[in-house]
Every structure is written in structure tokens, then in C-alpha cells.
Image (cartoon, rainbow, N blue to C red; front, side, top):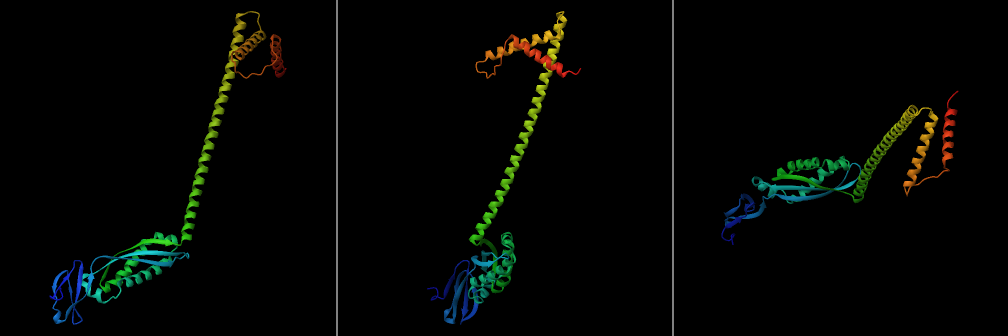
Length: 284
């Protein structure tokens, strides 16, 4: 209807290419325009000025002979001031961009090992963007941004990489566990050594206290009871300790005890054995 009335409408974010008798005449901006078709004017086509996105899947090989699929996302748009170049110079814009992306990626990735490809994906994207910017600016297009959005190695390679990572983490965990057990054993040994040392000090002090008590008892008894000797005092002490021991054994109903022959005569035998041992140990 608009063509029959010599009027044409151009939508927002678009431009129209006007030709007169088949020759480029003008670029029509958004809005309503007069188009005298009777004088050979017509609309050759429309061109979008919106940012468009092209995802390119490029398969290539790394320096360590691993095949990967690199996914590049290219965002581009046509320039209004170069709309004629964008409309006439390229017959298939997306194919042209894809060819340049393939060329740059397949020139860059084979120089890198697989791990470096993941680490330097921003550098690869920058190389693709620079190359596209130089090439596509001559055709009236602007490269807004280029991203390497994904890198897909072969499934066997990914599985092997995961196994290597898992084995490395298990090795670190085993080392940490062994180190913890080592520290625990060292601390336990230090505790046992400290406990034995303190127990030894306690026994030594206990024995020293017993010896001091016996000495004081012998001296006090000998001084208070004339005519008694140290032997008489020791016999009395041994008899007293003997009966105290028997009392403790009889007072406990659940005590585990070893019974030996006992009686008043046995105490004398024990005392004589102690005296004989001391006499034999004393040098002449």
C-alpha cells in the first residue's frame, strides 16, 4: 500500500537501501519516506543496526596433540554511516565472520598446550577480536566484543584430567593424614614420658618419706624407752605394718590378694631375712 502511494516506512534500529534504476541512491533512516517509484526509485533491502551474535564452534588441535572444540561468541553490528558497504560488499556476513574466527583460532591454539589454552583464553579472544576488527571494518561492520565461552576437550581427555586431579588431592590428603598421625604419636609419647617421669618422682619421694619416717620413729622410740635397740624398734614397726596390711585386706570384700603363709613366727622370719640381707649387703 505504501509503495503504491509512493511512501515507505523504515522501522526503528533499521535502515533501508534506496536504489534508482538499479543504482544505489541513498540510505533511508527510520521513519516515513517518499519513494517515487514512477521515477525508478525502489527499496533494495533493509539492514538491521542491532547488535547480533554469532556462536562459532571450531575444532582444532593443541600443541600436546589433544583435539578440542573451542566455542567463540562474536557480537557485531552494522554501522549506519557505512550501511551501503555492509549491504553491498558482503553476500554472507555470518559465513565471512566464521571464516576469520576459524583462521585465528586454528593459528593460535596449536601453539599452546591444553592447560595453557584454558589459562590464555582471554588472549585468544583478543586475537580473534583484533583480526575481525581489521577485516570487518572495511565492510561496514563493527566488532563489539569477542568471547571464548567454552573449551571442550575429548571426553577421554577430560576423564583423565579429572583422575589426575583426584589422585593429586588424594596424595595431599594422605600426606596430611600421615603428618597428623605423626604429631599425635609424638604428643602421646611425650605425655607418656612426662607421666612416667612424674610417677618416678612420686615413688622416690614416697620412699624417701618412708625412710625419714622410720628413722624418726626409731630415734624417738630409742630415746623415750631406755634399753631398746634399733632391732627392737624395726621388729615392732614390721609387726605393726603387717597387721595394718591384714586389716586392709579384710576390710575390702572385692580385693584381689595373694595369700602367703603368715603368723607371728613368720613376722620374725621376715625380719630376720631383712636383717640378713642388710648384713650381707654391708661390706666388712
